[in-house]
Image 1 (tube, rainbow, N blue to C red):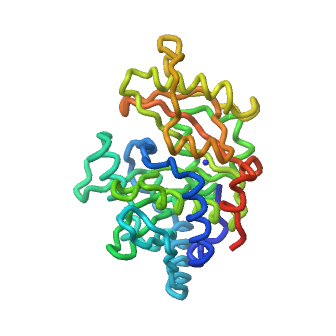
Image 2 (cartoon, rainbow, N blue to C red):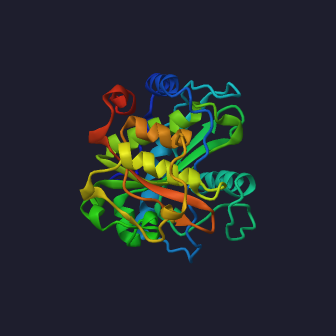
Image 3 (cartoon, helix red, strand yellow):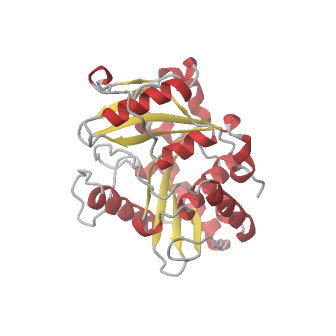
Length: 318
């Protein structure tokens, strides 16, 4: 739901004491988040376009990390394993994140992705993104990931992922200070809350350390019931959580709301509910993705709008 002048060494300096404090308090505040059921949509696979600037950033990041050990915070999961959160340091770690995405999106949720012989979820945007990962220190397995597209990289690509689904004309003036997040997923054995909270704490640190102000991303809602759940959520969002009109966006393929029952008594998915609780807003009506049978709500979170109750956890000085 911003960008990067210098590649993330600060995130990898999250100390054990601070990260434990953030993740521990966030977990207690969001104890109802037991299920991580959101995933970002898949953009058609295209020929990879390597960026000299991107390669330079990766090289600089490798050098920094070679000199600075990653600290593993004492966060507990269902398996009671300490975990560490940091930005992927090389292509092998990015592949680990992509493999987790494939497992969750394809094998668990049934998404239809282009064939990949290694069992990876790979798309055009990956080469331009920073990949935030959570690793179990005991099994050494990557158990959670977000990918983050900073504005300088979005400028090189010429678009955001969400522009494939929404008209973002009213948000153009915000994009220089906006990061786009997506491809969020957590391993099925680690959805008790700790990994999710570690990812959120990492995002908060990422934004603060690099001066970003806004997170933007597509929140996907399943349409197994034909779309009535999504339509009813839209009614709730229109009443309580809609962004100011100057930040409104418009779906390129709208969900046919007039043909759906929007009167159901429903609750948002846990992750989306968490976003709304900390102060995120919904930018308008959902887009319909018939290939994945989901309704996508464009969600925007401005740090200036953060619920004060959670600000000290997301934005604590490190």
